[in-house]
Length: 117
Length: 112
Image 1 (spheres, chains in turn brown, yellow):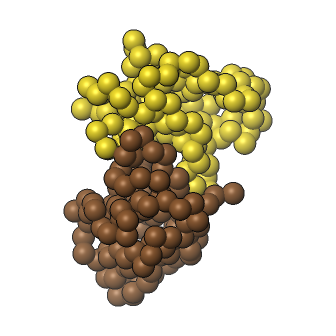
Image 2: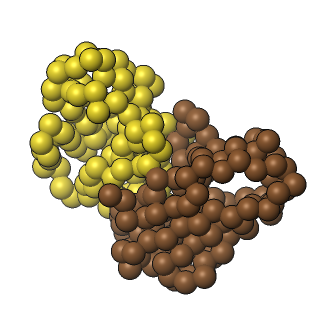
């Protein structure tokens, strides 16, 4: 069983809606990530939090707003999305900060399937 | 340039056949790490293995085995006696210089 849990599993939202994706990890990891994955493509990094501070934003549009309330929780707030934002959103965590720092394994959750209509 | 190349986009095998998934990487660093992940249709990326650049020993875990060859910059993954449950997309990944790179993935279908 994955130790990174994401909710909801599926989300359908209109372009004017505001919704949030939630992620929780109980491995004591200090780095948490949001990835976006389109069909038949590898995951693309969106954001990295290190010790609860945003350390990397891969030029993600402002309609995606991350939040890290504490070291175990990570949210992704969604507002005014476009149909092309429909994708699988993966939360992940690793022991150390940074993307794969010192070869730390990144552990992924089951993902949230987002459809924007 | 692609840091991790998985030349096989899709592979189909009949159950119980062996199958090898290829992964070729590119790096200038002497210290790096290689990974394999499995992504079934449900979506979760499941970590399978991590290997550091100083350990070229092959690894075997049940029906899974990995062949790391620095001379050819390859980290290939073999599934022996494939099963339907092995059907998934498999990603090879490289970690170097504090960056993490995924390959484009290989979609494996095991036909019963």
